Length: 378
Image (cartoon, rainbow, N blue to C red; front, top):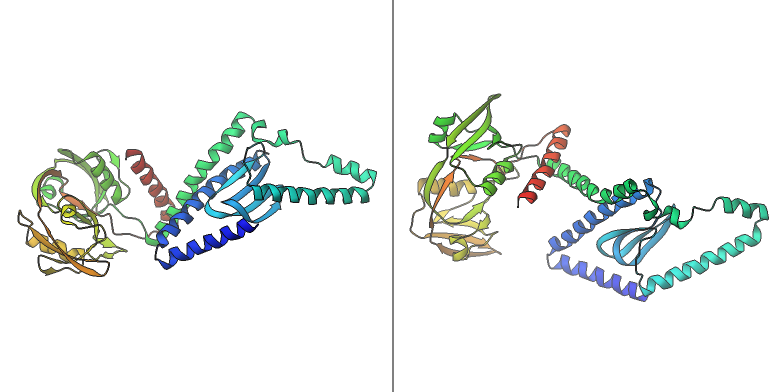
């Protein structure tokens, strides 16, 4: 008990320290890991109960118990360390700590004393009735006693519940900020003449891949690269068109930066989401907010794009003035000449469009599918 109190005090102190030092992301990560694991274990618990398996204990967290109670034959516990949880089925081996062993012995002695008092009060008929109401033997309720399909369902329930949780979280996100439609945001004259593609059209297929959201195009473009011949299907004024054209071969000087054009539906500040190549060598970092470029004031990503379109980047060094941790820093970046094939059109990955309840479910499924495809192709 003393160790548990000390551990609880240390845990509270650690949480306060994380909050005080501004490391809420660490606290949130711990909470999310615990949530995912607990939901996973709840899947095992639910299918175990459905299939008649006795669940000895369902725990939220790890380590010594802080709060515990019994309900319908299962001990429910909230434990000290908020890193996950567990579902202990009958027949599972779980080593106990010294404190837990002592507590179990104490509770067993109390239960035995209660039983002795009860036996002294009840009649022989009552005792016989109690015997008929005793639960089935432990072997009959254990995980190992179930048939193969029951065991498979109990095991499968854990990862399946992770998919359910991912879907629920995706629906919450889509319901809050919307989805990213695969809308064309820019197109070169050359590609527009060949395909009829125009700003505002929606890409529905790219290289025989179905496109549901803007990030789908980005995913396949990043993983597969841009081929010499591109096939797209797009919708224009309610009509669908499929076009094949030669991609655009480009030689240009690159600084190696990435940024989001939109955030929460509006043009965003020029904050770097990527810094590689020349940018990384010069010292730029992800999270830097560009406030001046070559002496020009930059308030949003649109300002930067406008300047670059009017003053194309060449071989000469360029100057970035960024805001980092409240300080203004200046960096000289020497662009690197790159040769690549490009699609010849830009597409949305930042702007979000809100949808109704049916759309939330639809794009919630799409969101889960996107992350599955991304992880499977990584």
